[in-house]
Image 1 (cartoon, helix red, strand yellow):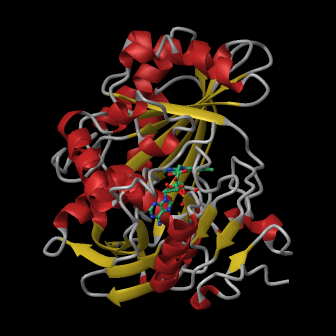
Image 2 (cartoon, rainbow, N blue to C red):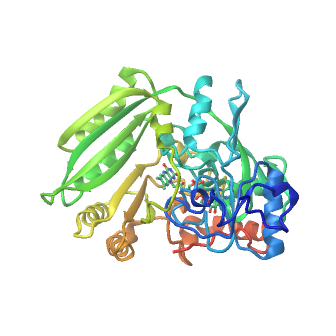
Length: 437
Ligand SMILES: Cc1cc2nc3c(=O)[nH]c(=O)nc-3n(C[C@H](O)[C@H](O)[C@H](O)COP(=O)(O)OP(=O)(O)OC[C@H]3O[C@@H](n4cnc5c(N)ncnc54)[C@H](O)[C@@H]3O)c2cc1C
């Protein structure tokens, strides 16, 4: 059954999935959220995206935009509205090997991008999970395994092909529509539907990959030593630290480290200071292909399987108070799953006004997640003691944005400019992400 509504535009024939369609179960939901949309459009071109937007407007249907479906707020689906699911727009092409310019379509998953670029010896600084979509990361920020060496995904975007809410297709670059380029690099969700990005990729094949398990003291001195090591680390080293409370009441940190080099001495030199972070309970290190990290093994369908609640904040300094609050939140009877990402390095290079991602002096991204049934209360209780130490937040790790979060994502003059541009490019707020939780 095609499920094409009778009044749908001809170019969308066969590309609209409705609840009676056998494909519906596969396309209704995102990673965190089960959706009940009235229609899911699967565009195969920018023109199809424009037709879908016009169709939704004519019928007064709320619109949700989806690339990889990993958005934590579940804004990639809705109930009773129209979802534009970009999965069929998933090409990656090398435009010019000499200048390392690549064109990546928004519906690709980062594992697909890594696979397509590997034969050319190229990679793009992205998120670290291969199933996450290009569209969500490249319009929000992009903090991944290469972040201290190469910065955020948005830092390397040179042009974006965007369908505006009224169906106009625009190619925004530094010379043509620079305001649109600016807002798409960090606050794109409210400005238009990105269908493709031109990105300056990096030369990269192999990386050093290590995992260490370190004992964590209740006062959090271990976290302060980690932050201290990272403040002095070469840019080649990026790390993620997860707190894990143990059955005996103690806490451990699982540190994943990536070094952007395939040279054993360089990798060893970058990793060695991490051994000073605390009592090492276990460790391993190896050289791997970048495609092993952002792996096709991560690819899966999204069925609302992870109904977690997530929030985040940025730290400029890992103070004693912040470190203690983090350890307490992760060791509480209802623990918050705490994950930290090292920033600094190349993330500090751009001027804060250069893109809509303005956070250019903070050193740590802290992410907290909690699970049903008490996710909301667990997260709130764990996060309250940390809040005074936080300095802004990253739009892409927030599952329940509200009236206060916009100012944390887009502080000061950045927020004023984002709000102005959202109004200019989407005056009726058709694309403004609507949180479901
Ligand atoms: C398991 C997991 C791992 C993650 N790892 C990382 C990580 O390493 N680094 C990191 O930075 N983030 C990470 N994230 C967060 C991630 O950046 C966001 O969840 C992001 O929104 C996912 O992109 P998506 O395209 O898959 O999301 P979707 O659910 O498809 O989209 C989410 C929202 O983004 C906007 N959007 C998506 N595509 C477009 C588009 N083409 N044009 C305009 N707006 C669009 C829309 O508002 C949409 O509703 C992770 C999330 C998960 C669940």
